[in-house]
Length: 374
Image (cartoon, rainbow, N blue to C red; front, side, top):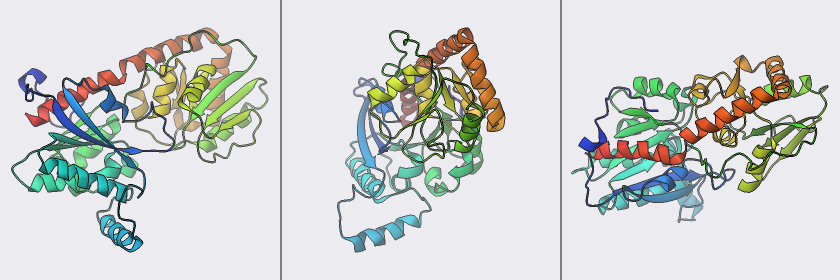
């Protein structure tokens, strides 16, 4: 699960950190309102072995709510100054979190500052820490967006100051190798809470409905979804359960059920009640819905993207080239007609999710932490 631009990692045993105490890692992450308690990168620090990593989690709102100064004139001036860094998604809450991280660095309270949402949250700390000496802390950032959008979201000067970049898709590795060739980049695949997201304890009772579940909104191909639903409208007993906070363009279509707000338990129940995870995507790196559906034992029907191939083995899902609605509809019909093949795909999807459970990913990240502090 690891790919490096230029570096061959040394064995962890040769680069062990201070054995007297665990590494002190301050992790900044963005709280998204649509994500439940079992989703997203915040699961990573929760999975660390506490004997090895003392994880200090700093949650940041996706906005300006955390910034303590309420005067709008001050806020407006700060926003203008921060936008000069070229990071469109960087907010006042991120600025406040970075100030706190700088204070921890100055006090010698952290060994590593890790920005779990690099596109949002890292603008000041890496450059300041790099400039001042002696070096007390190392800086790490994880990036999630596809190469097509990365260049519009990040300040390369900030990335150049990092000690380590981690990415969640092999398609990002080449982009960073070209954009910031002197910075170490490692592929660390996204994880999943495979303990919470799991197959139903017993098969659901047949009700004559064949259910496809689709979750999320970012980079979803709703046009392809609508086309596939239109082609399947004559197939009786079809139901499309869509969990999303935004409009999709498929509202009101026959067989479509929209879920705007669901609890973690309700989301898991929807996965468990479905027959297939239907996920047409415009672009992709990692995907929470993909991981959760696989962990619940669903066969995957998604778009042919190299990044998705890194997560879904060919024997755990079906890939459609170009999101052709006819091909999507045909694949749905085949899955519906072949129960044995559908079940086999689901079993292998679950096995792949178990291999990407967060404790495994946390172990890999711990090894990288120990290398960069050596």
